[in-house]
Length: 173
Image (cartoon, rainbow, N blue to C red; front, side, top):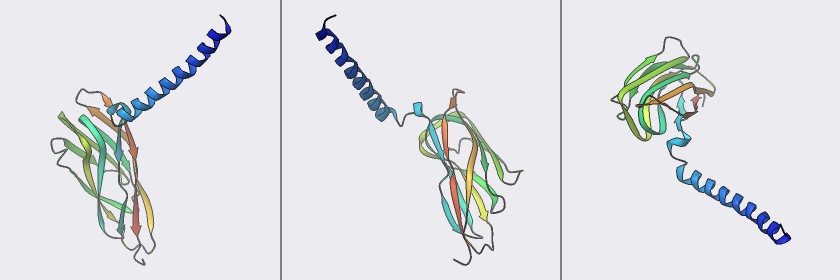
């Protein structure tokens, strides 16, 4: 191999790496919202006065053929009292059970024979009462400690979670 061939080979490697990096970047841009990267379950932040009731939606950014849900949600039982939950229009075809036997912990199970699909799908809305008589502001988390989503093909759907911060405004504010 002479000197010119070595130089050309040396240049081809960086070009190959640049092309691969560019293809990877384009792939990530095009497919970032696809199920390949998984869904995200979000509990939005809430803010309310002490003693008030709040509605907390559980929202999945996108789903395709979602037929099963299992969630375990932890909350501060000293500041929040669970009152109930309701399905959304999107999940009306799913049956649901909310086990609230242990204060501070909810186990939510949802299932349907045929999966649902969509973007920004509210799975369920949870209802809580905030503690009365607080004089100062308090913050607490509504945290998903376990999540399992399943498609109607009985395969797990990868899912990340984002906890919600509940800000309770005390009576003196």
